[in-house]
Length: 77
Image (tube, rainbow, N blue to C red; front, side, top):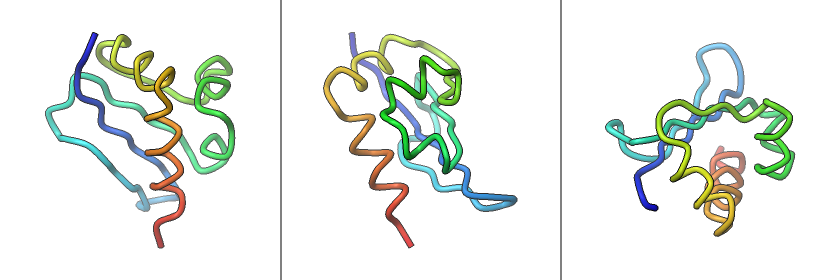
């Protein structure tokens, strides 16, 4: 299954980092504390939220794409 994903990392009030297209099939949101966890664990704990289709998220979790993208968003200055 394939589809586009937009990742939204909230660092605080009015401070959000975004990666991915605005018209994504799936939107993943998490805060900076959840970004320190493995994305699969964060999802299972309910700290990584998703809207839209879940298939693309599961693909991204299993391939490691989600972890790489979230780590990149976390490391941006």
